[in-house]
Length: 501
Ligand SMILES: [Zn+2]
Ligand SMILES: [Zn+2]
Image (cartoon, rainbow, N blue to C red):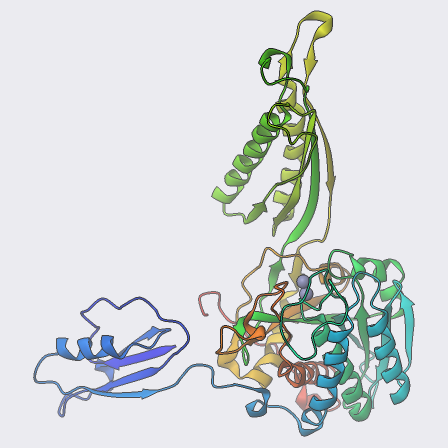
């Protein structure tokens, strides 16, 4: 952010923002006119000396303008200048090695065998009790603090699974398994939680119990739901539960947190539209299913627009997944369209599902050919499946998460987590137990860096600088929520305002 201070607002239009650099300018007034209350400040997230030269020319001739330039952008290029305990810094090298091993050996949906083995081996080596085989490859480790006067328990969750993507990151530790990669950074989440296990086991500087939840199949496998179905919270009761996700949309050294919805519900649909096939030269004897499908999708999109006009955020992007005809001189019998519906609002979610079914009944029925006994109509079979729920952060837990983040990142670097229409199965954990899901920035100043690529991009790679930062966040959270010394209890922070960042 650029801060510009002077005696009056600029009279020239600011140029287009330039990305990649930021600076701070301060103007000082002429002698005899230095009242600080005359100063103004404007924030611009770009650096443009030309603009400030023009600005200087617009100031009254009697004023002398002094410009000082200094960088107020994110100075944290790595974790070394953050508030990290020496015991956690000492784990950085090991965590990086584990992360690279995990990255080289990705496992998708319930096949995270390499990750589960690595986690189990390390927990065994350190003498930490754990249970494995929960939802196939899931593991829960339990560490008790020096005290247990509080009787409270906190759950920390990391997902372990990879994606069906062919990696193009070019990193030396790139995936060794063709067609699979850790394209969402769950290798980093696992390595960080493993580092946290070592740290908490060595220090036990808390009053209560923590459960470290290593979860499979976050990517479309609803691993969290399955762990819960297999008794996660009965076997390992938690009073609160927390999770992190690395965030290429935010800079390394920044964190995002908000209360309420942060990730969307994701429901899947498939609509098979049945027409009447035939020769396109005989239009009265065919019902083209593509036309019917087009009207269905248009009607649904109009419905979405109605909800958007009322302030809801909804997403609906149909794709044609199958057609019975690819010939230009054949009207096919059927076409299947499929996709996802995403929103943050449970009421909208329900209304959309009901309207989907109505639209799929009404529109095909309006396509009729033939007469009497020979009447034929189009039809649509709909398969609508509810998927992950909205990830809702509990107000108080979000405030505790914000307080812990502020200790690690500094107050100015903790920003609001604007809701994202992506899905996250931590939502189910947060429905059972009050919790908070936060994002840790990982983007560097180099836009071509693998750390600056988006999640699920073949060129993406987790930023290892996050590893000690994440452990320090867990430490601040656990040691502050379950303090041995009541004076060290974490105070809920005021959440960063949505207008910031
Ligand atoms: Zn993902
Ligand atoms: Zn992810």
